Structures are given as structure tokens and as C-alpha cells.
Amino acid sequence: MEILVLGGGVVGVSSAYQLLKDGHQVTVIDRHPPGTGGASYGNAGLIAVGHSVAWGSPKALKIWFNTLFHDHPVFRMKLRLEPQLIRWGMKFIAQCTNAKAVRNSLDKHRISMYSQKILNQVVEETAINYEQNRNGLLFLYRNQQAFEEGIKHSHLLQGAGQILETAGKERLLEIIPELEISEDHIVGGIYSPTDESGDSKIFCEQLMEICRSMGGTFESDVTIERLEASGDKIKRVVTNRGVYTADRYVLCLGAWSPLLVRASLGIRLPIYPVKGYSITVPVEKDNTPPRIGGLHEEDFLGFSSMGDHFRVSSVSEFSGYDVGHTPEDFEHIFNRAKKLFPNAGNYDKAKCWSGLRPMTPEGTPILGTGPHSNLFYNTGHGHLGWTMSHGTARITADLIEGKTPEILVERMGVR
Ligand SMILES: Cc1cc2nc3c(=O)[nH]c(=O)nc-3n(C[C@H](O)[C@H](O)[C@H](O)COP(=O)(O)OP(=O)(O)OC[C@H]3O[C@@H](n4cnc5c(N)ncnc54)[C@H](O)[C@@H]3O)c2cc1C
Image 1 (cartoon, rainbow, N blue to C red):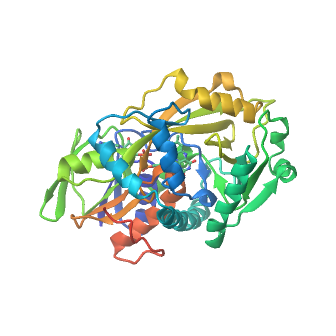
Image 2: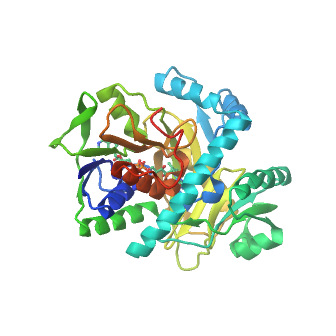
Image 3: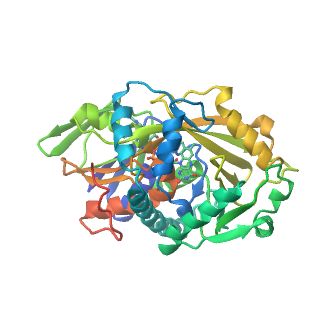
């Protein structure tokens, strides 16, 4: 079949690879070169299966409510009448019960675990190299009470088969000796030995080349303007570079997905662009970045070493589609990163970036078809899209093939 993939972030490129493996003719179109136009460019790089936790919970609701009235360095939201945000917010609030937090976390964990298995297959098949570090991730705590709560929460994913080790101060230093010179007062952590990290932009670039060698086509500078449908079928995709037609279409436009399907087809996808920021710090001769990546739970900081660069990300901001940034936006990241890992890299030469997480209220992606039988959705991967992309690419290829996916994806349809 001829398949047109809309969007060349990590979700689009991974979908192209799985579809090519199944013998389809695949074209990917994007307004930017693969991996550079959206969130896949500068994310924290964590394949964080052991941290597949839903955002929505009673505790999260309290935090978000407070941010409406008080400035918070990480959670940033201003009250305003934005219909997309209001609709999304109402749906998010409905997910903030204990029961739904558990259900959504387990759904995310199931996709993430499957996705890591597919990633391992891709690595084996292609020998792709994207600065991967397969020595696990460490989730750090400064506060003893928060650490104890974290241990309690870890039981949920342990029950679902995730290996998670509680690590006291001494064990932490064995896992990340670079914490020895930290100016932060870390009391403990949770070590997820099977987790990993890598640079998703490099992954996209490398996988694109592999896809090309399999016959795939990638076109950049193509801005998708609208989808045109007739009855229950998409007939064509109109772009600034002409019209594209195919047997099947796969929607992988990340945070921008709802804009296109709302304007073209009148379909509302519950995805909001949640802005995040990252710094990429060059690692020079005498620098000692942490040997594995992880998260600082109280500072909401994700970090990973990627060969000659060290990446740190944070912040969840609800401010629409603006991806601009000012130096103040990065204060929290610089302050905390320098305290935690003072010698990780040359912070004076850091490159600053911001991107949009395509968040659904549940935190799980949108998969399968909606009212149009030849339009497949693979979008809405939120804050764990690098982690979940490989699995949802395989699931999408299976659905296109008419096969039952290997894992349950109920509740993840167009909603
Ligand atoms: C700060 C930050 C840190 C993160 N950290 C992690 C992490 O550690 N681990 C993890 O698993 N996930 C992480 N994520 C989430 C992850 O990066 C995203 O979920 C994932 O990259 C989404 O991939 P995507 O391919 O769906 O979207 P994107 O990478 O955003 O790609 C969408 C593509 O669509 C294109 N596009 C959009 N509209 C049009 C149009 N009209 N015409 C043509 N092209 C168009 C864009 O150019 C872009 O290339 C993080 C995200 C952020 C912002």
C-alpha cells in the first residue's frame, strides 16, 4: 500500500520504519527536516518506562489549582479564556481521581514497556547509534517524606513487572558517583536498572537514513494546509507544495495534530501543547557528567548525558503554541542543574530550547482510526513520547495491516 505519514518527529519516523518493514511504500512529509520541527528535537532523552506515571492525580490537581494564583518555577499557567485549554482542562480534572491515576499509569506503563521491547528490536535490526545509555535511570529525592511517598508509588509499577530498587545515600553514590560533589542534599532515590536514555533527534536522523535505504521517501519544507475527505475516506492532503494522495494516511503531527483535524474535518482531539524547556550543555575535557540519566523529583528536572553533551529539561507551561523563550525561562533549570551536577559540562556555552508536549488528559496517546477509515492516528504522546513512540509505531503498522496489536490499546482510540 502507499502510505503518507504526516509529520517527521520521532513518532512519524518510527511509524515509517515499521511500515517499510511490512513492505509498504512510505512517504513522510514535514515542514522541517525529521526530528527538528517539534518536541523530538530537545527532549530530556529518557526512555523512562519505570517512570510511566500519569500526570492527573488528586495531588496534581492541588498543584495546578495553586499555580493559578501563585507563581511556580515549574508549573506555569495563567487564567485565560482559551477554548482549547478550557476543554482540555475540564477533561484533565476528570482524570484527577486516585482510581483514574492508577488506571492511566498502568496503561502508560504497558505501552512504554512494549515500546522498549520494540526499540530493542529496532536497535538489533539496524545497529542504530543515538548516544544510547542502557545502564538505567535514577529518580532522586531531596526530601525524606517525598522519598517515602515515592517508594510507596513505586509498588504500582513493580506490580506490573517493572524492576525498581530503593537506593539509600550510599547506593546512590555507587550508581552515580558524580553525585559526590553535588551541592544538593539528596537523601535517596529509586533506581530503574532497565531504563535507558538517548538523543531522539539523532535517532530520527539515523532512522531516516535507514528508512531511505529501505525505499522510504522524506520530504521537508512541506507545510500541510488541510485534509480533504469524501464520505468516510480522506481523499487528499493539500500542502504548500501541492497535493498528496495515498491509500492510507498516518497523523503524527504531535502538538499540532488537533489544529489540522479540527480545521479540516471538524474533529476535536483532546491534545494541549504543554511547553517545556531544555538546555544542552557541551561536555568538555575536565567535565564529569552523571554516568546515567534520571529525574530530580522535587525540582521536576530530567537529565541525561548524551556523549559530548548533557541535557537538562523542566517546566510545564500552558501558554498555547508559542515556542519562543527568554533567558528568565531557563533560570530554574540552570540553578538546579548547577547545584545538582556542578561539573557536568560548560554551562556558559549551553544552548537553550523550548518545545511542546502533545498532552492528552489521560497521558496516553491517541491510536487507530476515527470517522475516516483510511486515516490512522498516532499522536498525543505527551511527556513520554520518546519512550512510547517505538511501540505505538508498531501498533499503528499492525492496525493498518488489520492485525490485532500485541498489547491492549482499548481506551486509546479517537476520543
Ligand atoms: C522539554 C521536554 C522534555 C521531554 N522529555 C522527554 C523524555 O525525557 N522522554 C520522553 O519519552 N519524552 C519526552 N518528551 C516528550 C517527547 O519529546 C514528545 O512526546 C515526542 O517528541 C512527540 O513526538 P511527535 O513525533 O509526536 O511530535 P514532534 O516531535 O513535535 O513532531 C511533530 C512534527 O510535525 C510537524 N508539523 C506540525 N504541523 C505541521 C504542518 N502543518 N505541516 C507540516 N509539518 C507539521 C513538525 O514540524 C514536527 O516535526 C519531552 C518533551 C519536552 C517538550
